[in-house]
Length: 601
Image (cartoon, rainbow, N blue to C red):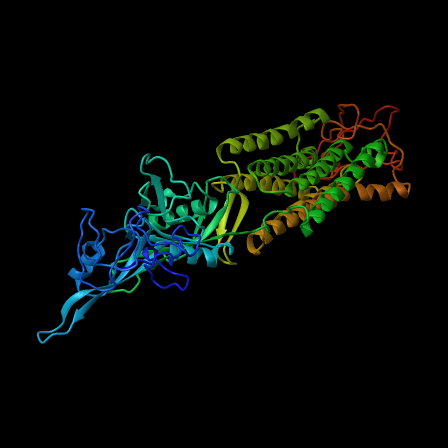
């Protein structure tokens, strides 16, 4: 039995014992050495032929056993476990990996040898071929180290010893014999009595590199799940954004029937990072989303400035300019929320997007809703006097904003949207990071709150569709409310039914915000711009109405009485006050008194 690293070889790789003919055993490969044992003194002088002899550990030189081997004079393979196992089993097989006397870890293919006789084959010995475990590691390292894919061969039985790793980590480790807590220096030759060799388990790797840690995590996840056939996603840590991998485990039993070996081949590859769920600088959508938000903010801001500067003009003053300005300003702020849609998905950005969009949406919608509600309350048929001042109406917007703020605060602490990793195997092995809450509770609450607000506002605007445009902006309120409802339905349906990435959803939401806010704001402003440019309704009367019709466009509040019969008032309509209708009413210099007692239909 001649391990290759025991042989004394010459320059032609021939076994030699001739003094001065052997290569130096220090690894330099220089010729001119004499074959000696590991003590460095005793010259190897073994016969080429002869009977085997077992020397034991008594220090005797077995001259009749081997030729050309320098490592130890006290070796007889017939007493090694591999030989005894092959003799007892009497069939070809692989041994379990074990420690060679040289310190290397290897395994041996064993084949019994027989001599023929008249009584049948007689056992004569064992032919053995050694394979170092390091050879598996060298093969894996050569083929996979620079590929990005990591491969490990691990024993299936506890404690899961390593067979080979493509990362270059050895399957064995050496400790100093004098201090087992210290690793041997790298220059100490394997098999030196100064060092003790031990096999490594899968749990003894991971500290050296990220790749080893990924292999260890992958193996334990496969084991925990019973080694499923499908691919598994593996993370180094629970932190969002930590390196993630896709892994597969394969059972391997070399030469089934000839060995009891059972290994697990663990393949680990980095998961592809999906970038379509975020809009980052350099993305085609990045500039588009910022442009949409900028245009919407600028246009709505321009509308607000125009309305505020023209607030003393009659057609704008009679149109309840305060709440119209508040709504248009809110539309401009809502477009600012578009800027939060760009950038990575983190816990912070997910929370900021939730607050910006939902709070600004209700902040913009509340003045429009109260505008519709107040006009409805003042024009509905009733025998009771209704008075709603500007201050009261402004205060009525606060409950909606406070309710939305409360909802946002609750879900910020109870179930906030967080950056969540989603793994998919549909288009390869991908990992994406999306903003996602643990439950759909927030989505349901917001649908009820915001959609309910829009639907009620649409109903109120519809009931006032026949109001005289000189006193209210029924048509504008109807267009604005229905436009917001339409945009919301379209965005929700498309996102729910279309197969879109997160970046596409963000782009669609940006378009929806621009469309809903600018068109709704324009429905109030553009008709007034046309009227003013045509010279219609430029002079403002200091008229305010209270009682059945309060002064939403006045600077003061007055109460009026009337002796007009209910039949003189059309239900859901207002008497039009214009410069050409002074015959039916007296307009004082500072105020006008009107009476209206609307009857029930």
